[in-house]
Length: 250
Ligand SMILES: NC(=O)c1ccc[n+]([C@@H]2O[C@H](COP(=O)([O-])OP(=O)(O)OC[C@H]3O[C@@H](n4cnc5c(N)ncnc54)[C@H](O)[C@@H]3O)[C@@H](O)[C@H]2O)c1
Image 1 (cartoon, helix red, strand yellow):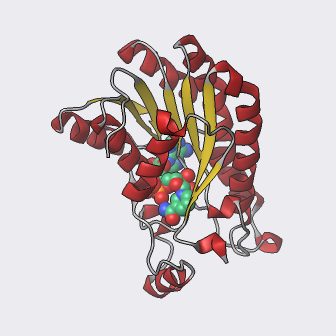
Image 2 (image 1 turned 90 degrees about the vertical axis):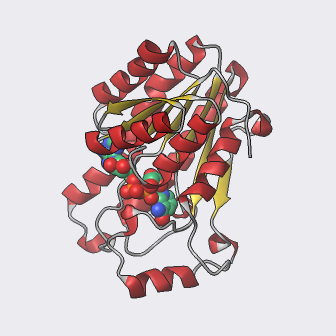
């Protein structure tokens, strides 16, 4: 599938692995210049090199999304290297502790909120002005099915991902008429390192929760994100696009 992104610039957080890597590579293969941002320098550089080897334009950027100065610098990197910013994908995230809320360590709560929620706010805070200065564009925030339904064992993650849904709606309302469309994507389980805490039997149990009979792939989520950034979704603003093999349809 091809999208007409040529000559424009995207920033993807958490682009050194899994879903973010697939998004960065798909956008670059469709003509976007991509800032491959990740807290892991090795992985950001690995993905940027893969994009260059495939003939695309990319620069690696090291940023911890829980640090607002890093996030501001990632946006500045897009402007300095490629002349502006049109698209952003706030994808970086961690799974956090699998304890029910009555047993959750408050420090573990804060860590998940810092990355999975504050990181998205810091992104929007700096990406939106840059996109406005570049003449408009779009942002996708990566939430989850756990931003739509609950999960007994993952309270901080569920709370952060639900909050990303609300933050996305608020941002979309403020900027839809100004030329920045902001939407969220809600993947079901996708086999990436974020699921490493699950053993094989837990993974099989997870498969059973997806009526389609399997987990998703990073590429399937990347295509949904590319759609939300593209002109194909020009009437989407503040939407929750659920890509979950039927998980939430029950
Ligand atoms: N894989 C799934 O089943 C699934 C389902 C729903 C939503 N998601 C969401 O998709 C996003 C991507 O997850 P993934 O499955 O690709 O996981 P992943 O672990 O493969 O990738 C996450 C990336 O984020 C980076 N990262 C972690 N903390 C960071 C920080 N503080 N600052 C910058 N980068 C940081 C990691 O280095 C890694 O490269 C996450 O927001 C996750 O919550 C994943």
